[in-house]
Length: 500
Ligand code: BES
Ligand code: MN
Ligand code: ZN
Picture 1 (tube, helix red, strand yellow):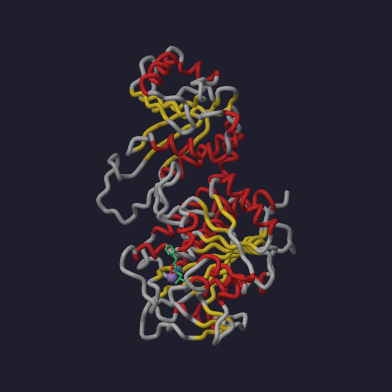
Picture 2: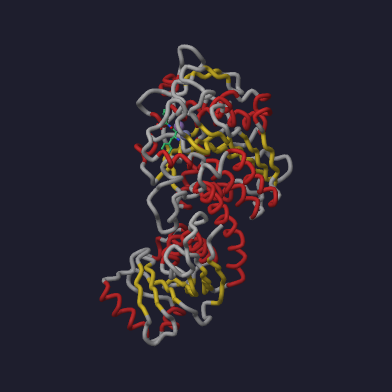
């Protein structure tokens, strides 16, 4: 982890250090402690706001250098917009905006976590702290020419958040900080180059969750052959790097209660195989393991914050390569479920990997539900762009809960349809099914394929091809790999599946 931003909590009335950050609403009103800290500079803020046409709209920032009458090197006023309408994700955004104002090398910053009418709650202050760390993340371990204090160099920042109850905020951040660590772990995995992060290395990194008390089981090729995972193994057979499946278990809940399960597509590199992809942007296919990265990041978050839940993560790790031993269009493979699959296009490999891992989890784990995450189809980007992940589900309650967790966390999902009319598009003339469904509704036929392997288990599939990587930069993410899904699913678990 390369972020070096230290966050601490102090009383609201503590003397600020370095850059001072305060909040106002859309009438430029600030809270009482803030007004007191500003003193004569309250007038300065009014003048600067008028000069910069700053109206306090949510996330806008007024930046005043060397403010007269204050010890601060810089005064930054962040707009909170309409104070009544604030959601958790707004506070993350405020933290992100504040982090964007740190000098390239870092330094000290004090943020007064106060709204015009009230001090912020611990949760709100903690969301700001999380937003700071998410924004400050940078993947730079392969840059050898960086210098401290320069653009692109290492960041050494110390940020103090002024809050009404510093002890309570500190406690809450201990937990939220682990979720941020999980997001950062997922981002690191997505950003790593594919010569470094191949299936065995990915399995090794996932195994490091042992340190947090997660039980790890790694299935090698022989073990998967014994289980009959012919769909997953067919994808990996053209690669010099052997495939792996990793099962992670966090037993933080009541003994004997069925776990919740998360399944990730972990294609460490997707060339398309014999149905090879065009060269343009093929390098992006190092991120085709974004689903698996999310599952590892989520298990990290749950274990580190000792979530009171039984949770299983399962990831199928392969590399999809063209080779003398690669699978061909026309091949028929037998999945662990016994169902046979005609390969039409070797580039529709993610569903083949998930077919065996979903079946394994449904049968062996018997979870309460399974959510899978996969950078599955280009078509989901055509449909939804990069704002929402596509959600497919056979269970309305689970779908509702994911929708709500998406709005709370800001990692949004949009429900897409399933149905028998779509399902029949993947019937094959030679086998039980084929692995593509034709030109139309590509994300839907991919989801129909997966549904044939869930065995009636309550299930949701999240197609994260548009959200896991390469999405536009935001206030809380400047990284190519976004870590999408960790906060969404942590929220889902916290809201509905943790015992008290
Ligand atoms: N990994 C890709 C999907 C993808 C594309 C993810 C772009 C992120 C960015 C997946 O394995 C794939 O190749 N899907 C094909 C399916 C088709 C062959 C039916 C696609 O979407 O074109
Ligand atoms: Mn593919
Ligand atoms: Zn793929």
